[in-house]
Length: 260
Image 1 (cartoon, helix red, strand yellow):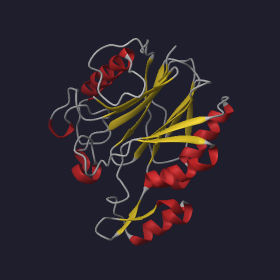
Image 2 (cartoon, one colour):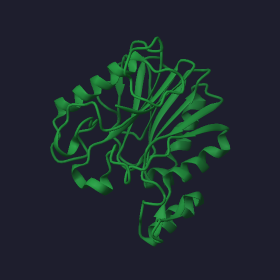
Image 3 (cartoon, helix red, strand yellow):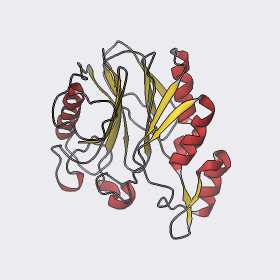
Image 4 (cartoon, helix red, strand yellow):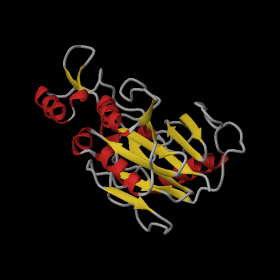
């Protein structure tokens, strides 16, 4: 279920893989979205999200990178998983005390309210999780090529600062790596013009974009410690990949929350 976990003070972080859920067919097993494919059942996705929330409640020891095989004392009550209707933009939604009636249309969620598990989904785009672990301000960000150029990560950082965040840790989740994410040369030039660090070549010598390198460069000026999970969704079948699977690809997630 969890390909990576970390805990810093009261902040817990997790990136899901494809295992431990109820989805079948091309979505098997832990698909966390109904929007990525051509017919995944909404009830199944809700059940998968419930399984993830329950696993997060059980907690993870600091620095853990394994699944939750047994409960630990690190967990606590999850008020709910808050997701987004991701549109490859740079809008940021702030999650407070009120229960949300619907997923906000945004590509970043920010909160200083304990208990909400903020989630960014991905299937080649990168889920980025951010926290000021001392002050309990967290964010979940979905960054693809368009979001990278639009500056969704810097905008999330600015929103965190507005909520009192000072010193940040950033976790970069599974994504299409710069050695696999092939694009036309004109598109690479367009992205690199905005974020030069994103310029890349595939392992076979064609133009590519390195989204993670671009995000890391954007974080370089905000005194953030960067933890790079470093797994490529195109190469690693433990994760969903739109490039590899097409329109029936599911979505994995990056989740972050502050224990109450």
